[in-house]
Amino acid sequence: MAITLRSSREIELLRKAGSVVAEVLSKVQDIAKSGTSTSRLDELAAEITAAAGGRALFKGVESPYAKRPFPGNICASINEQVVHGIPSPKTRLKDGDILSIDYGIKLAGYCGDATVTFGIGRISSARQRLIDVTKRLLDIAIANSAPGVKWSRIAGRMETCAKRAGFSIVKDFVGHGIGRQMHEDPKIPNFVSEELVKNDIILREGMILAVEPMVNMGTGSVRTLRDGWTVVTKDGKCSAHFEHTIAIVKSGCEVLTA
Image 1 (spheres, rainbow, N blue to C red):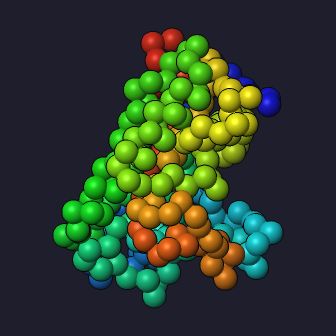
Image 2 (tube, rainbow, N blue to C red):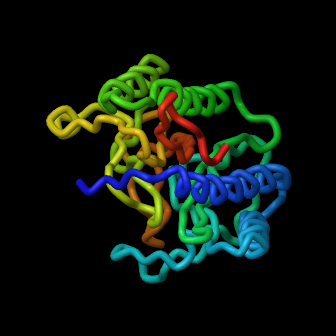
């Protein structure tokens, strides 16, 4: 792995990118109501991105599994959609839905990336519990990240939290380093694997990580739809996703997308 440690000047630039990410996620939540199309949410994200002078990280990304580059500024994933949901004027939110919005920006050469999951109108207690537990996994990572800590220790606590709640962590997708590019070393799993134990990550001051637990109400297995992008749970049960970009600092960690 080639992990880059960022200077205080670079962290300030990452923080500025992160502030735009936070603004987009906040304002998108404000207008995400029953009847709103996911394309309207994407339009708002595009407006804020342009006003900030940045570039949306996801728009135009190519995949060997998809016939076209990703068309959205955001990923808008509803209910059983785990990640990479494509915004569309035909997709309108309904009361009882849960919606994950993933957004990233590159601003002045540095990236920010975060995700939030929330309910539309009144949602079931089971769906609210899924959201709360997934958010708790991210909170565990933030509370325990500091120089010298092994990532396996944090990942183990995240995994235990999900299992105790009766939920499953998605293992097909993990967090990642982030900086001048959206995806940099190291890979940041939300679970403990043989690979992680063998090649553990020891956190160091200056590391920038995008930590993003994805948790399913049922099985952790997922599949990709014919569009080549949208990932859904195999059993059709709901999924939740939270993410922050964090910086490892002397005192612990700082959330750059808060």
